[in-house]
Amino acid sequence: MRSAVIVFPGSNCDRDLATALEQVTGREPAMVWHRETELPEGIDFIGVPGGFSYGDYLRSGAMAARSPVMRAVTDAASRGVPVIGICNGFQVLTEAGLLPGALMRNAALKFVCRNVPLRVENSQSLFTANYDAGEEIVFPVAHHDGNYQADDATLDRLEGEGRVAFRYLDEVNGSARSIAGILNDTGNVLGLMPHPERVIEPAHGGTDGRRLFEGLLETVNA
Amino acid sequence: MKARVFITLKNGVLDPQGKAIHHALEGLGFAGVNDVRAGKLIELDLADGTGDSDIEDMCRKLLANTVIENFRIERLEDA
Image (cartoon, rainbow over all chains, first blue to last red; front, side, top):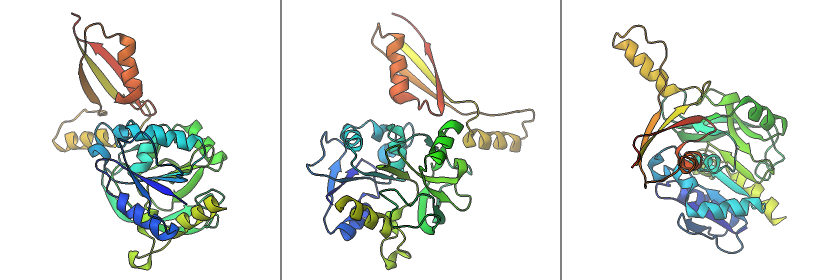
């Protein structure tokens, strides 16, 4: 699997994501700067990392979503290339229109930085094939704007189509229906606030995130 | 020509920031504040002849996130 990690000014989880991908896939990902208009040839997975792209100016992810590279990411996503947006990456993907809804300021207005228990709601997706449906896992979160909101019709559609990938098991940020991560309608784009790339090896205090990337690798290579 | 764009959260969208401001006002002893909603004001200095539809396009494509926000455009002067 040849992966790319998009780097914006203010990204700060890009290297963590690259390290996780390299460990799991055995290949160093291409780091793609936001000004690029094309992705390297043969990319079969794209990661949009966490951080504070453009200092969260205007709205979290708003500026990054309009940067040149995102046109290439959107094209790739429409061709079916798997794309994951983690934390700020999730915000970027909603702002870019690749995922529905919006991520607002945490309901308690505080930056939340801790390990949170999650439930895997959909174990059939490209990203969650190595988990069991209903399985409880722990990923860390670190965000100020993780409060997922969408109108009721959108939320009902996400639930009805099995597009809620992960749900918080306790109150974290006020997200509608405790949604922590969602899939697009074709299932190849995942956005989530928690950080799977931070729980890859035992020294991280957990390895629950590793299976996400391993599952993806198996699906892409299959 | 100048224009102002007012960006506000849609009705029904929870505004934690507005709520915190509301609490702070109460803490300062201001009674009778029923609700607070916080928004943004963006001032644009535009080429003369910029049409309303251009400004609306700017709002839809970048300035507002229409999933959660409304916008209102106010033109300040016409050259």
